[in-house]
Length: 121
Image 1: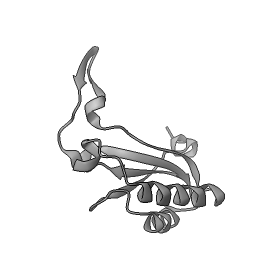
Image 2: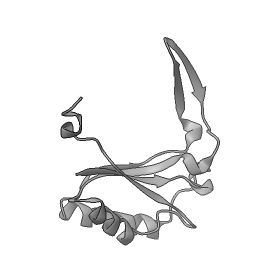
Image 3: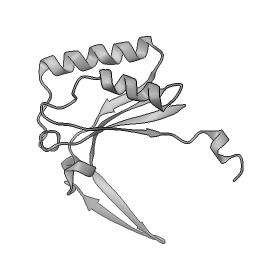
Image 4: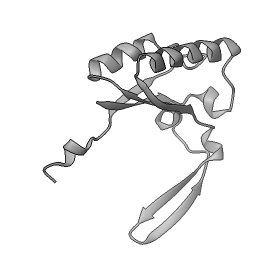
């Protein structure tokens, strides 16, 4: 199964505060472990929402909304796409991950739809 591993934004990430050299090194080593294990398919960090845009859809209407966006806890600071055998394996890998932020942080794991999920559609 494939999962998206979502690093939730914090006040620091939204302020554009870059991770320390030590954290970057630890995260690089963790990514290498993921690659060697055949787990990591993709991943990246995201710039603050102040540099982003949203497009709101309502029928045929499109409204462009400039960042920054409110509710930091609902924003994404980074992500990985992993291939794992099950959710338990994904959880075990996340537990091994260095804390992605200098303070408290949260990582969310969500399964991706696969073609077989649409077989009955």
